[in-house]
Image (tube, rainbow, N blue to C red; front, side):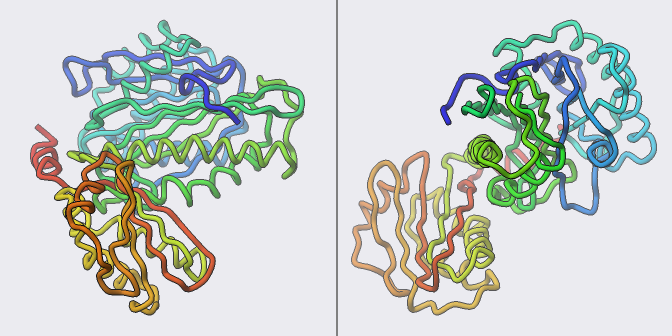
Length: 407
């Protein structure tokens, strides 16, 4: 597997475009379209929030019932959540317009929205945006890059990645883009993620691979403890790589899972590091837990702790907050056996040994915690399982951003 340039247009046969539809923002692109020139099999995972936005309900039905997909229409600025029948009608009108513009069936079009909850979409502007997007579709890397920019809300930068690997019969590419900065907490986040691949693979195996992978990637991200109404991750596979179609869990399937994991994990980490107001990516790795379930619970508990996140912002090695967060995770363990390390590109230091403070330099610890990417390694000394979660520090700017989000 090797990293390659681009995002959603890196794989063969995928086109993308962005347009300024004036949905909320006055000075930027706020709609994107993703399109395959041949039908794709599709897989999806969605928010676990009981309150689901209209596009989530629409896409869940398509993933379950439609034999193929070919396009996704995305808008930023308005979430189309808590909008009742009118919101569902606007999904249908958006899809019908895209089907008309692209000359494909309406059941082959996904929709996705992100932004303010409770507002109705300006459907005339949405439909005009779809018209504009259809005319601008491009299969070059710039088209995918523009689409990644257009789906942002409070994100400070676009998020895209792509990789390639050798499969039987051809080179397969997996590329993706996502947006996510706030209202991010397992399971899934206020995130929209779109992954494309030219691999030939069955719909069933594609869905299985995605469903398994989100557990270790997007579901391990927390910025602020709020699970969104709009979380959506879609994967489209159009088969244009020319590989022998994957119909069983063979070597090529395993290679695809590794590539999918690389794309999803990198997108997840980009979202965590770009949390609203954040100055640092905060990674928590729990090792030597009794089982994977325990390791996941422990790492999520630490990465979601507001007190710990505030300490990371202050570059303060306040290890008691981490031990406290482990303690309320729901996992039973012996506090007097836990070791804790901090590391970054600056260095590595042991902060806690057997549940009490180690002999360490506060000055060195502060230097380590002052980097853009900071990692806490927690050794539970209970077994062989491990898990990694990602988040960010908690800053004054997080409150400022969310205090006036609707204005």
